[in-house]
Length: 209
Image (tube, rainbow, N blue to C red; front, side, top):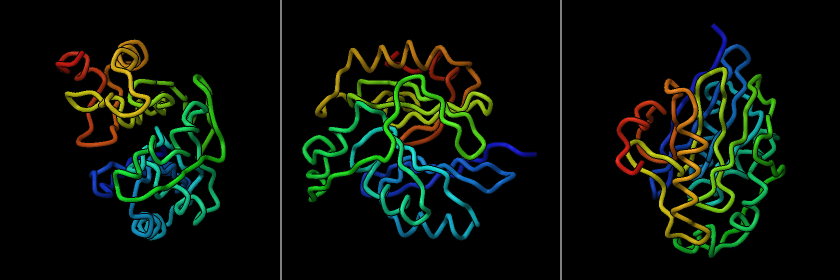
């Protein structure tokens, strides 16, 4: 049956989740947050016979963005990020690459806004702005498939850090409560670190909420 298959790869020094959101009937994929190990990710995509329709960045921190350009270029795919995340991507002090011993600048090919719907790889992907971890952090929601990729906004039983440049604890909790917890409870949540969860489980059990 055609639909979404999600593959998870843990990459880099901060153990970041990179996801392949695969359209099973066309072998097209969206690559979410390729933060490191570009060669490995490209190899896995080719090994599976997948084409890449787009690279989606939930935010601009180095551990989510540093392999984006290499992966995108290997498949001729565009990189998407929220329009308010341009500064985070481009500034090493804000994207935290200096914490990883580098001074790297990243970027996107297409900057999107809250509420935009991206028709990619046969999916309708809704952009949901969720500032708080970073100023332009966002989530990618595939309503038909009951799936959302949340980056470092929400974790299983926890929430994202707000002590980095551009972070704001009040904004983060507002984003989660008003933009994410209002989604159907059966929605699968794919976070930037650690294990997957569901909106319903977080609504009932997350001690930060």
